[in-house]
Image (cartoon, rainbow, N blue to C red; front, side, top):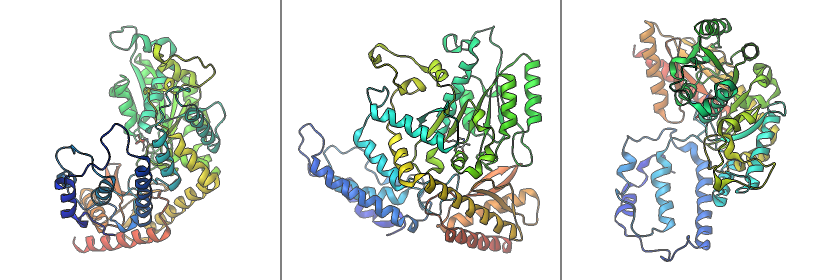
Length: 506
Ligand SMILES: *Cc1c(COP(=O)(O)O)cnc(C)c1O
């Protein structure tokens, strides 16, 4: 397999732009013939299997410049039908090589994810059903499977049965929905009906999270009309966890100033370092102050399926809502975000609006449209269910443990290297580290930027970076099912080599 887009540009160009496609399918109304669909789908299955088998032959990042893909696409849509085989050829030559390969074992940037085989099959089958489970009656099995698979996950996380789950596209939306419910939780405010503008009776409503919380919490504050100025980003301690004394001080100051604290967002596995806020203490404060407690565990929540990680998340069960993304570290293809809510009635109170044309006669059923902003809903539960079954709880646990072991081994290697330092604790499978060459902090930052660029330029691995305490820090995360110890050893060689070269160039 050729690992770059130089595969066959002239041919692609011709097939895309000049070759007038013969009308392969009759122009009569209707989908493509079933026999043709079956044949093309078998070929697509081969394309997918080939890709997964050989994805490591690609560089993780495609070697292309912005605009390279669009330049090779015809500017206007085809007027006449094109044969599926030709479209699949172009997929293979133009699309597949020119994407970033998230399913690559060397993908260790951001949060490494995997669209696993069983999950991919679930995606394809859901496409064939094309069900829109807004109401129970518009998708009985999808609705019930969503409730059931979410409840399996709840059990896997060791959470009590009062938590009820549903699936959103992303953690950003799950947190948005949760904080909308938080507004409803403060029942006397009547915001659903009266809104927030032009109300002298409404105090400033404040939210709390740590300075390591994900930007999606800020977006939720923007979208819901709390406003960024009313989101308090509490400083963190040496291990990047929310400081309880500063949370208390902020709450006290806000109350003294006439603000009305509404919700606190704790993070289990922050995006930069995967630090875990002190949930027990935050939960006690939330209880005392009657605040909604939302826990953002988008990535690290998956580790909670291993009992040995649960002490790190002690207090999780006291949350009003928890988000975790099976599409991050539970091997379900993007997108799939689980929102667990202790009192789903609040979600319905926040969101349920039933227009006349959607009233139904079934009673005692769940209509998933009542639990958030969206009406339509794709059948994400199918891929989740298939992944949970095909790996089993034990299989998932083993894989998460292996990733954490590999990350700890990598952290130990960093510590053993002169000139490198680990920059944050490693509770899960993410390691923050940097080089500490001679020079000013700014020179060290630039050294690390060059080091990262040099490692990533080679091709077989992709790392990312973050800023911690104002410093530029490299970040490696293990989360792909194909990543093995050999890949970590390769990363170590690449880092050591680039480090040596950068030092020599000083
Ligand atoms: C990745 C991440 C998010 C955002 O996830 P999306 O599903 O992409 O919206 C939010 N919070 C944390 C802690 C994350 O790691």
